[in-house]
Length: 474
Image 1 (spheres, helix red, strand yellow):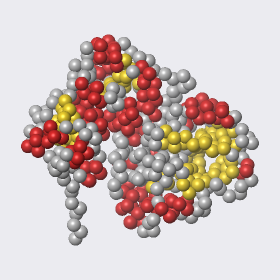
Image 2 (cartoon, rainbow, N blue to C red):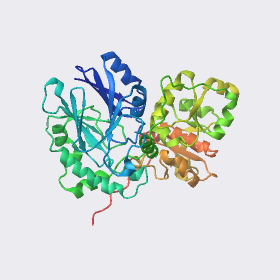
Image 3 (cartoon, rainbow, N blue to C red):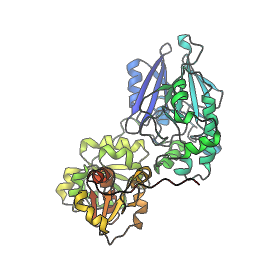
């Protein structure tokens, strides 16, 4: 048997290839949309990819299952558990098998036993692997998907937080408790192969180690220390990270079936003469580093530097309109791959950043200032401070005069802000607030300033802040 691990750092997504060397066939578990790496690895190792196994309908990235089925005829092994609302809808025309608790399937001489492990989602399943080709009659490990992570477990509130399915968080948490209790009965020696690592919004406190064991997680995973259901529910629903709004889009896309991109899919650079129409008709994302964007940019564009695109495009790009990129030509395909992975389907093309600068269209700028330069205006109320950090960061401490508007929801909440006052945007270090400044300018705010160094610099300068006191118990 051969086991290969793939990790998409931008999405904190782990996927796996399991190959039976005797039969020369392989299965990809929880594949991402960019399937070329799996096909290249299979070719390198002398395997044919004949199957795809998915633990659930993913919410945080576009699945590559359909793309693999379409490209190489891989059989789809997917969950048929859960309510009708969470059944795969694109299986007609593909070789597929819907799986239930207790089922098993073979890929060559490797056996996969199915466990229904609901809670993160109703249809979630896990795969217990036994290498029968190697003579084993006991399992080696379990692919847990978004059920059990290293040091954490999948959150049960995504359907309610991201998809608006009221009441599902509580019921999901109770299902998750039962799934965890079942997980605890597995042999301690089993390896645990999850679908995410540190940085994923699918749970809280995920570890950065790629794999673990059942025994280690039973001993040290905080979510596995509860024997009381009510205490577990209270724990698992508290302090979860912000649920990106695009998660609801991903659930629908992966359920209905992502668009097939096909071999050789690519994008083109466009003539800058069309940029004004692009701003009017779509979302134009400028990948320029924020200090350069601040000095001059096209009005109506949003600044998301390339290294922050995977984290923030899902919040800030309008999925119902075409997306355009202002970038260097060599950045276009990398950026488009990131956007496709999070379900942005209509990427209309890119504009060369140098041509944009030479066109004279970059007529807008915003100011920046240090805490020392801005503190008096902030504390006197001469400007309005906007803190775009997460709720947890705000709760841990914030500047007294600030109003909290989380960056991901800033396009929706901007209409609550005053147009007759200068807005100073602030985050921890100045990177997210630079994006926020561009969002506010694109929304029509003229007087916008980015606080250089953010909250960290404010504290370093010894300026005052507020940390809310915990509520007194009665």
